Structures are given as C-alpha cells and as structure tokens.
Image (cartoon, rainbow, N blue to C red; front, side, top):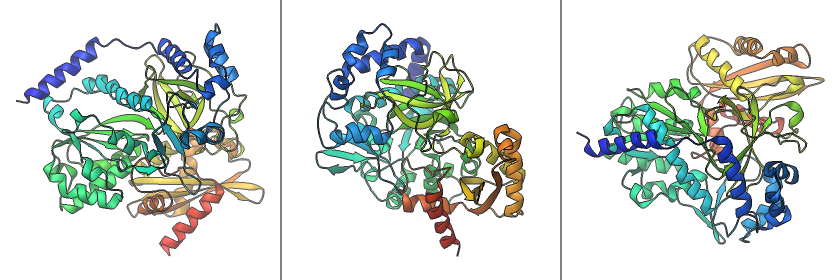
Length: 509
C-alpha cells in the first residue's frame, strides 16, 4: 500500500475542501494596490505618481488614465534597458538578477525581467493546482512517483552581473531542496545546453525513473518521448514509464496534439493545462471536466482586458492607446479579449500579445485563443488561431490524418489578397493540395461569417500546401532554437513568410 501517497492525497483533499475560494474582483483590487504601493518609490512609480493614484477614490480609473499601454519595445526602450544594465529600482524595487530571454525569430530577442518576487509568485502558483489535482481523483500511488520537467536548459548564461535563460530553465533552476528527490531529469541532465544531447542523456537514464507526470510544451515533449521510445526500441512511452498518468501542458492548447500523443501512449493520460509565460504564471486548470484554466487573481499579477476588435489593434498587433479596457468584474463569456498585465516583475499595463476568452466568468476560467499578431484580418476576415485550430480538427476527421502544425500568411496579388497555408502532416493522404484548400475554405466559411464576406471581396482565394510535419520542427530549430518554450508561429507576415517558403523549397528540392 502506498502509505506516503495516501497521506499526501488525503492532505490535498483536505486542503481542497477547506481552502477558501478567492473572490476574483476583491483579489484583483488588492493586487493592484499592492503593486502600486510596493513600486511607489521606483523611477517608474515616481514618474507616474503612484502615490497620487493610490490616494484617488477610484484607484483603477486613475491607474488606467495615467499609465499608457506598453508593448515590449516601449517598455524596454523607456525603462527596461536600464534594468538590463544593472540599475536598481527602475520599474520594481531592487536589482534584477534574472532575465527570461525569448526564443526570438529573425528579429531581436526579448529580455523580460524576472524578479525574486516573480519567482516566489511562480512557486506559489503551483499551489493553485491543489484543487485540480484533488478533482482528478488520482490514485494514492501517483503521489509517490517522480515528476519529469523538461523545458529549457537550467545552465543559465551569465551576462555582466545577471543571468539569462528561458523562463522554464530559470524556474527549474530554482526548485526547492525538498523537491529534488522527485524532480527529473535532475540538475546534471537539465544543465546540458544542446537539446539533442540533453534528450540522449535523458533517454539513457529513462528506465531508471518511475515517472508519474511530465510537464512541458506538447510538441517538444512528444518529440522527446519518441526519441526515448526509439532509443529503447519499444512501442510506447508506457513501456518505459508504466506509471505515467499526467501531462501538464504549458502555454499552448493541447487538442491539436491529442491524436499523436495517443499513438505513443498505451494507457490514458490526464491532461492539465497551465499558462506559464516569460512574464509570469497566469492561470492553471483546476477542474477535471473542462480544459479551461482559472486565472490566478491573487498572486501579484493584475489583469486588464481589451475587446479584440479591429479598431482596437494596430497593424503590428499592439493595442491602440485609446482602447478602452475593462477589469475582471465586467468581462463577458465567449468574447475575445487582448490580455494586458501588470506584475511584480515591473511590467506595467503590458501587452503580453495573447488573446483569451472567458468560458466561465464566475470561476474566472479562460482559454487561450491565439496571438494578436497571429490573426488574419484581410478586409474584415477576422480569422483567429482558435478558429484555425478548429478547422484543422475538422479536416483531420475528414481525411483521417494527423495535422501536426500549420502556418498561414496573407499574400498580396495585385489589388487582391490570398491566404497561403502550409499544413504539416505525417501521413500520405489521397488528396491533392487544391482539393484540400477547397475543403479548408468551405470549413472556415461555414464557421466564420466575416471570413465568408471577405471571400466575396478582396480575399481572392486560398492555397494549401501539404508538407512533411518535420519541416516545422527544423524551421523552428534553425530560426529560433530547439525545445523549451519555443512555438511555431501560426500566422506570419509576408517578409518572414518568404523566408519560410524559401526554407521549405530548399528542403523539398
């Protein structure tokens, strides 16, 4: 009998029963006051007169009127460049020792400050999963198993007087001592910089571990598991880790990967979605009968929401300064919003770039619908990533295939436009590109009336090119990096798309 597991499980069930529910509206009001009062004496706080804002009767109104929205470039060019140079008390008290470096594309990389307070916030956010774990009713034995956290390398890069790495690597490098006995692959393997070498080292040790849960980005975790399976010449990952029961997915919707995961597993795996970004741990799934995630409203991050409408978004995907925000008190379900955050890492009214919808306002549950930049709006088409994903699921069923990845761009053709899609699949299917494009067009028109109208105007046609799925991984490795928080863009601008097409043609020639 799993005695320790029974004790842990019972403790979680008790905590789930007796921990009070948080009132999101009250929690957010308190978070905003705490952020403002803590940063009152920083350069940013003095410049925007946080002390005066806190003295107003309506603190949020004063906050939203006096402080502009910040893109990463605006935040960096005006403030964070000082933080990166090692200056103290710029947008948050003290000196910043860690920076989460984005994977980047062909453009410059981003350096997001990760303060000590943010690291504490990320650790606290893990507690929010207690209710979710209790609701999944996992067996007692599960709580004695090991946890594989496989993201970026924990071998952070020392630059001047600070450390740089991806947020998953920074977080893993800060795990508490009492967790080390459960954590895999361990410090030695996690610190290997080269992704392929790190996977090879993991594969060698894999049979020695009793893994109960795995966390990471689905595409890279799947690839890692396939390499482990191939290394040991077995059929499924459960032949190596028979007690693997939970996969914690981070930052992207898991649904597009379900079919391919089913092929490499022997037993059912519970999926728990989380929302960890370079800017903070924003939400986590807390219930078994939904894939939506609950915003963490009491943990040092203040949320604002801008209706995702054409008139609120600039051409580059940033939010217009005259856009009217709302707080969690006034959101509506099934309305798409641009997410704006202020955090205890010194991000203020920061455009994180994601769009979300509330699926349950009372529970503050959301789903990520896409990116403001990953959005096609040629003459009002208003085609979002969530609609694209749904269309791909329809086509998977139509052609009995597994669509691994896709990307699309709006291409100018004289006075009109066309959408050009590249679809990554693993199988040979008996359909040509033109027929696939026609079906894709029909599916999107059926579910998006704005797109249907656009197809009668300047959106002339769509093209579809079915290509091997591995090309998406190879592109990401070449132009970004391998593993970690890296994700393939679903929508590209024409300039980057030309580089993508050149890459594809070279690989297929």
